[in-house]
Structure formats: structure tokens, C-alpha cells
Image (cartoon, rainbow, N blue to C red; front, side, top):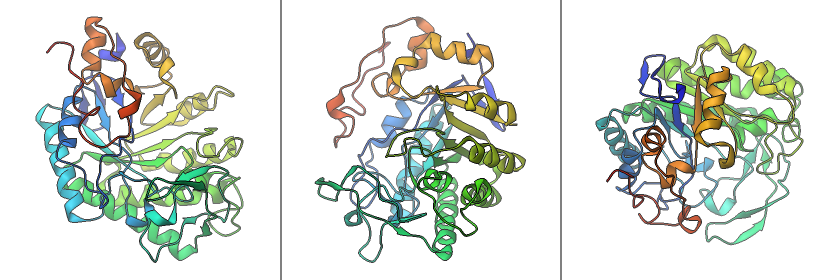
Length: 355
């Protein structure tokens, strides 16, 4: 099966074509520092061809949830170094996902002097949790100044450099699921009339500059981009247009970054157009676990619609997922109650099938 074939993603020889998708697990402390056992979690899953880590804020002002890790200080960096060493000890490859949440979050989670920032002052029609876990109607963010936009790009660049210094193989820039990059790409959340809005080119400008700057500092082979055109998460229903994504891909393709990681869209086949345009590795995510069984993913690879396929929740309860699929072993279900709870339970206590 193509799922189990090796694949060269630029300089990275991957042992198979199964990617562990980024999944928020909320085990970091209030300072954004991962616990020591996070290294065990990722090491257990190093049989994936590529691991993409949980979403990680590039700055304190990019935090939108309790329990998410950061990589903007030395203590955080040290814990990510433990993770990188653990994955590499088993021959794995790992990219760290960088995410700024933009309008999705609550000011109580930010440093005292920081407002909730977004491309435009467009409130999300949803509830968000504050620093104590209490839910509120989302706050109205403040539109970012051009200077603030450039400072956020600098934050991403510095975080990417820290990740590489920690031994992480590369970074994935999170441009999906209604977070900051997606907010810039969307005509519904980006109502700017300056360089960073007003047209498909303007809406793509922030992500283009971000990709180019990060690639310049750490090397394009160390950079991936995640997008979800047409995704509805975080109040993004009906707020995307194909023109912006086609413009984005045309503009970043020359940078030669490691990969494009996209959600498969069912309403229109935009992902097929993106696949045809894209010049390096193309990763497909099916968007929900019911379509992430082995045969469905094999069909995506066999059709040539993607080079790699990413899988989320099955990796939570099956640390040896690829081996289980290879040997036709049973697949374990995950415990919903521990997906986002603190502590090692529900994180590192799922056994491998062959133990």
C-alpha cells in the first residue's frame, strides 16, 4: 500500500506517508511550558512518517486557550528540545505548528497590556473561555495597525528560529480553522483597505510575507503551511473565497517551502486545483475521523490527490497506528473525557498493540 511507502519530503526521508496531524492537548502550564511527559507522548508516536505538533503560540499575545504551549522563552524552548530529542531517538521527523489565535481568545489570557488583536474589528459569533475556564460571548478585537502586523511576523520568525535551535525539524504555520492567518485570508474577517486587505492579493499579503520571512530565516525546507479553505470552525462559515487561495498559492509557490497542508473541501474541489498548482509536497487532511480509516486514506494517495495524508484522533489512542494498519490489528477508541484534561492520563497511557 502507498500508505506504507517511504517518501522524501525535501531533505527529510519519511518512513511512510502517514502524518500525525496537529492536535491541541492542553497540558502546558500557565507559563506555556510543556510537562516532561510530553516528550513521551510524541516519542510513542514517532512511527508516523511525520509528526506535526500541537498548536504553539509564537508570543504571549498569541495565546487563545488555557494549557497551550509557547515557544517564545528559554524554558519553553528547553521542553521542546526534550520533545525533539525523544522523537529523533526513534528515527522520527517532527515539525512544530505555530499558531496565533487572533480574535479567537479572551483578554484574560493575554499579558495585562495586550488587547485582543485581529485584522479587523469583527467579533466572532461564538463563546470563548477566559483564563478561569468561564465561557463568555467573544469580545470585539481591535484592528491591528500595520506596525502591529509587522511585529507579529517578527514574533513568528523568532519562534521559528527557537524551534530549530531546539532541534525541531521545521515549523508549520497555522493558516486554518479561523485563527489569525485564516482571518487575514477571509473577506468576512478582513475588512482592511490597506496593503493587507481590500482584494485577493491584499488578503493574501500577510501570509505571503510571513511565509517568505520565516523561510528566509530558517530555510524553506523547514517551513510548511496549513490552510482550510471553506472551513467553518470558529465562526468562519461562508467567509472564504477561492480567488484568495489561488492567489496565495501562486505567490508562495516560488518560495519552495516543504509542504502545503490542506483540508479536503466537499462543496467544491478547490483542493484539486491547489494540488495541481502546488510544486512541493502536498498533504491532505479529510477533516473528520470517519474518513480517516486506512482504505479511505489509501484511496487518496492512490488517486494522486496528495503525497501524504494526515490523521488526528486515531493517533491519540493508537500510538502505534501505522503498525496497527500494517498488521491489520484492531484500532482503539479514545476517551473523550481526557482529550483536553491535565496530566498524563489520556496522553501517554494508551498501550501499543504489540506490547
